[in-house]
Amino acid sequence: MDLSKLFTLDFGVVLVYLALTLYIGMRAGKGIKTMRDYVLGERDGYATPILVATFFATEAGSGTIMGTSEKVFIGGIIWAFVRMGRSISFFAMARYIAPYMDRFHEKLSLGEVMGSFYGRPGQILGSFAGIARCIGAVGAQIAAVGYLFHYF
Image (cartoon, rainbow, N blue to C red; front, side):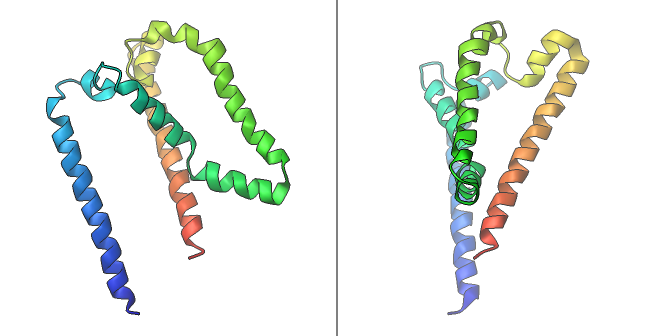
């Protein structure tokens, strides 16, 4: 089998996917006028399920699926209980911390929350901290996918 045809097919599939995603995004984004519209979406209840789905998709990344499975396989069932600790911490945050977050209802980012406490320097530092955390998370995902593709 000629591998160059396979790579061309793969490239074509990725290109079609990106073009379709761009087209859908451009059509869906026509009504967006402000940053608040972009971040929160429509206020008719549509945004909340999307945010919940995004949160769960983020939490069920390759580290969860591959990393935990590997640790349980190598180290035993204790690693499954270790992983459950993260779920318990989410429930604890929802129970004890989330009720006090109402005062940040109008804030859209970590930078805005930090800015309400520490002014402009806190807002800038908080924004950079949030960006650094996201870059680290994306880097970990890329490393995990690279680790997986190393075997194929």
